[in-house]
Length: 91
Image 1 (cartoon, rainbow, N blue to C red):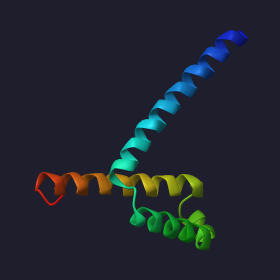
Image 2 (image 1 turned 90 degrees about the vertical axis):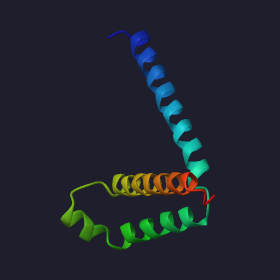
Image 3 (image 1 turned 30 degrees about the vertical axis):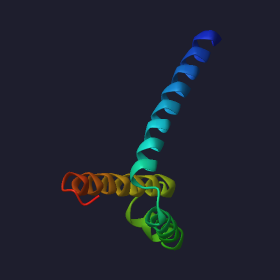
């Protein structure tokens, strides 16, 4: 494969990752930019650090990946709850 083709793929991949990251950031700022999110990040990180070996024995997964998955699930729940509350007029 030629180097120009690799560079093209690298640039396109970078743009896709950057665009997706930007969209995720907008969603995060809209729904999860508060103290509860900070507490969730600190708590899940502390649990992963303290119970890291036990987690790895039960689930053969990278702990960073596990932290990202936990945070994605958290963001999903927060988005759902906030939309649910906005539809009913609580916000």
